[in-house]
Length: 491
Image (cartoon, rainbow, N blue to C red):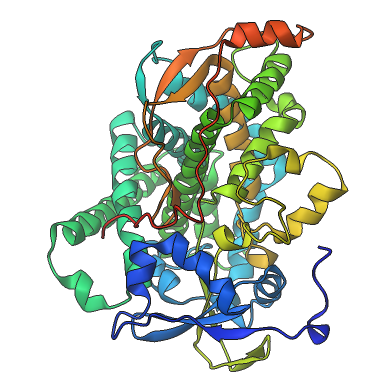
């Protein structure tokens, strides 16, 4: 990135965020106005001290420093309030495990997420995408958030354990995951355990949802132990649990923890990204028209893309990438120092919580010109797009980068192309609701009106394409910096 210089040539700014409440710290600001609070922090420095409850923490506001932190996994390990809460839910799977165990776990799982393996899953991705929109009717109000969650849960369930979940159980998983996501964030920003032991309705919902997901996973594992081996990730784990002589067998708990981790992270984040993408497309008709033109040309009358079509869906992938920049589902992450260290000139004690926010970093105007604009053209192949990648953190970076990044990009591209090949989604009359931050960022209850599309053959004139698409309203814009006061979901 052109604006980054080596650390020894830069005088980093260290500051403290104002507005600390006794006991709660900045938890009130993070809960009530999380995006606005994040956007305010670079004013105070490149590394800004905040309070999570009574605990000190440091927010890293510059992409170069975030890269330094994420590359040094021995010093900045997975930890802090976020991962303390996630470990209660996920155990010590590949998402949450400590540095010392990560390499072994990643080596076990990585073959199931390689590009060649992702290509094997494109058929089921297309099937799941078609299934969520097959019954839509012209003019129908569609629960887009529910549809995208049904799609991503269907995909990750089949990748993890083939057809072991029937329709009713899959629906139960979706409802449980929604309840879990609603409760996770407040447990991170206000890490005071006593608050969550109170038997409030929200706390009981969260506990029931967690228990139900664990019970479903245990039932799937028990059922599969007595059946023939299958070519899915559960099959990989069950084989590893038997041991092969050269490596120690993984434990029963590790099998369980991996499945819970991958089920949760593999369904929620891509679902939120897809819902945000459809919302943004409806607000930006020129982007939508260009997307439709590419999809029509690539599909050439077919119902959905195949494995060979993914490289040709260039602009479709740009729409997904720009959505990840503009409205990243993973918007706030924590790390914990394993030793006392000097970072950007700031002395951090052992056990310090350090945070970074893709939402904040993706709005750095020195990295992204006019950062509030939704502009997929930023990512068209070329040197400029390559340079911008250094300021993008939708899947983290370094050795702890999301193991499922290629799978997620492929499934989101497949879903967007498949649904956009059949339907145009329109916002209901009135203001467009802003994305709601929780454990992830995205529209929690997005309802849109579906309109059937008439595919326009490749080579049709621009005027004819315009007539075929019909009149389109001027785009409605929202400005996240000023609209960042949306509170998070409840506990």
